[in-house]
Image (cartoon, rainbow, N blue to C red; front, side, top):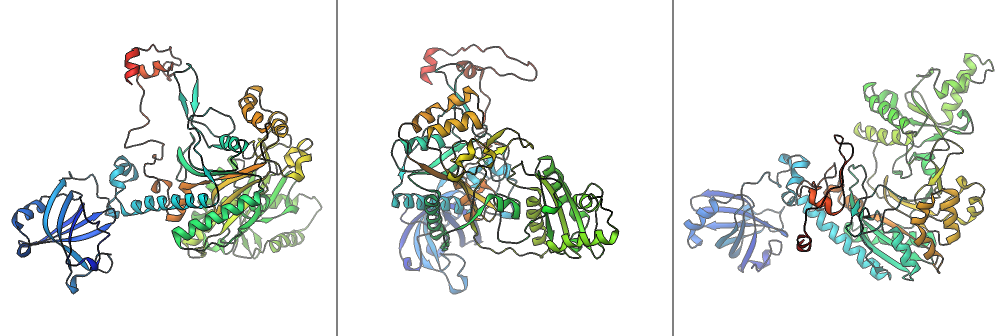
Length: 628
């Protein structure tokens, strides 16, 4: 229909006849003889000029234009002309030209819109926008994000192809396995009572592809997890999934670093320096209180081993320079709330806030770690000696008068992704930024966090049951193999997470390829039931049929694009996301199934009212099923 798009046109097209199609953004009737129309399409915008002296049948076209609602679709033909010098707009690509209209035809008249996607200050709340997602997607910001996502995916595929990876699709209908998060189940009529599960990741399939000899696999994979939602999580998401045979973790990290280089160069025109910094899990949690630390600023946590009441406890502190004077009691309330919630989640046993002053510190209640340490020895120290003892601690962590200090104790048997002081550090950085007391540089601090413990205690107990820190297929570091049978809690895994400015982009590991080791981990360390072990029997069998050493990684594509576009929410980089409570507000999903549909699958629904339910009887005929 059209000869050009709005984005095609430039001063080189002056005096040329063109035909455009697009949405009417706004109309300005300046007089009885002059009308301006702002036309836009997916590629740009163009000013249309309808002038009585130069347009046949002007009166008829003017009536049509005056009746148009915003976002009505039109087909226009005319001649490209230069704008008068005093009417140019350098902010627009087509600001030097306009289209002198000869003919205009309405393709689809738009009813009044529920909201205008072009006036940012008047946008409704997110739920209203998700209910009309097709309108919301007309916003320039979302158009930019989705197109940049496409460009990013294209760069990824090109890189993978350049490096010998094979793009292989894995099944979407899998089976329920116990190694990860809650799954979405898909009932089937094949065998009543049985269900498929939507995959949380292609983990087992990609390991089978290594056993099959494909050597280098990748996939832009759709994954599903029935988890609680937040700004950076969706029930269905996309990951850049890859697996390689005959590799070390350094080989995989090198590939990922070069992939990140390609993406940032293609999308941001930024050169990323490699190799990335490496940091152990122990260092990350001890210095930054997080397994995904933001290393662009200081506020590092200090370890205080002398204050630990026993060998089962870690004592640590973080100092906020000038914090005692910067923060009022009211402004410290969010810190108290954070500490309370963090302690409930076992991220620390006790964390207290102290203001440093010339006399010492405030908040030395009897239960605080500092107070117990100062008085617990029972050696009859006088006040002066206790003051000297306290001063030695303050000096060791560079705390001075006017500073704010958080002191915490936590169990060595709990392996949190974030410690209480790690959360305090993040909140303090945000608060200091708002006060202009901290500047965090705008740079890309990529980081590998590695040497995670292979297993984690499920309770605050030296003899508590062990669970896999990541997943049960991660291989132990070779130097720790002998500890598997004697002290598995001390075994480190060949796992690695890639982190950018406090955000985890992805994680991977070298996998167990020895069936005996994998079976031992399942049975003797994780103590999985025979039923659960049997659910992994296909994997163990494949490992025993000549499966090479292998490893891989998965990067979150949604999160990656959110960083590239500087979007706060993942919903801003996904064309059709779910709402904060996991619903599709446009398609009205999930929807209530009919009794007939449930009966076909042998499903009955228990409610709080009836407590249990009777098996539904299908009233759908065989012929109706075939029609479906």
